[in-house]
Amino acid sequence: MFKKILLLFFTVSLFSAVYAKDLKVGFVYVGPVGDGGWTYAHDLGRKELEKLPFVKETRYIESVPEGADSTRVITNLAQKGYNLIFTTSFGYMDPTIEVAKKFKDVSFMHCSGYKTSENVGNYFGRMYQARYLSGIIAGGMTKSNIIGYVGAHPIPEVIRGINAFTLGVRSVNPKAVVKVVWTNTWYDPGTERNAAESLLDVGADVLTMHQDTPSTLQAAEKRGKYSIGYNSDMKKYAPNGFLTAPIWNWGVLYKEIATQVSKGTWKPESIWWGLEKKVVDLSPISKKVDKKIIEKVSAERKNIEQGKNKIFTGPIKDQSGKIVVPEGKTMTDAELLSMNFFVEGVQGTIKK
Image 1 (cartoon, one colour):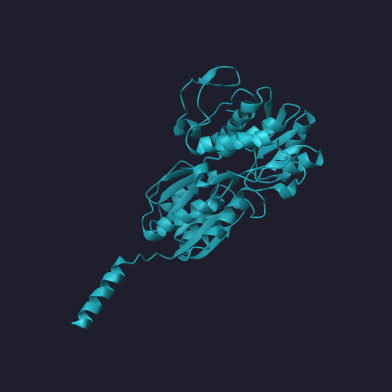
Image 2 (cartoon, helix red, strand yellow):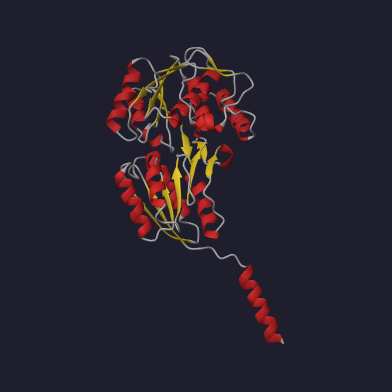
């Protein structure tokens, strides 16, 4: 009788325990891990992921061009038994969808895209929230009222960030303008530096960027001007003029997705988390920033986290002065994800 009870107890315990499926996780990077920016931030997240007990292996392939090369790399990872694959650039979207059709037992997550399938989800963060906060700092620190913004490509992700930043700037300094120069590249230190210098030449005394390297900050530092980074804490690249940086904490999201895949609860959904989840944040703010501005940033952070400040709530005007978001209306996620106009205060053009 005792043996039967013991056997029953062991059987119940066995079935009630949660056994996590072991994972081999692959990452496809568009830049080198040493870029100090976008890819570097993703790799910090990968290292966080390795701390989970059921993650038995991670592997990354860096500097993979968008297009046919990415299809080959993603396919190779799936063939080698990686059962969770993260593809971390917008241009990997269609290749990820195509490869996933051939590997139904693999979970794929694509960063910054909008397509899903039965085994492909996508993920991003509401970086525009942190951009808005950094704009408050820029607006409070500029003396020339000219702020420079080096932008990669004129796509909704970048446009949204520029607009949120500008709304933050003008919430504390309505006279300031944000001048935009496009590089049409994610990673090209020389081109980024040239763009930054052109903005400094027209009087910008604060620079920020949506790029993958710290070249913009280095250009500002050389000229004794302030800078705001992106992707990661870039203070070491501009120790004197660095004010803060909107940063990514990808590890928060990577660990959550991996846990779901391991437990069998993962679904191919679209994830878009913000400040409230700490996926996006600000790096420590420079002591050179006025205390009243820091207090303003703190107050608005709380408002954003609590849903009281949605940032893109009307009235909002475009560059021509036309109301594009009426008073009381908040832009939907679909509208944010397809944004193709500049708000009042931005000086630059969007090529169609």
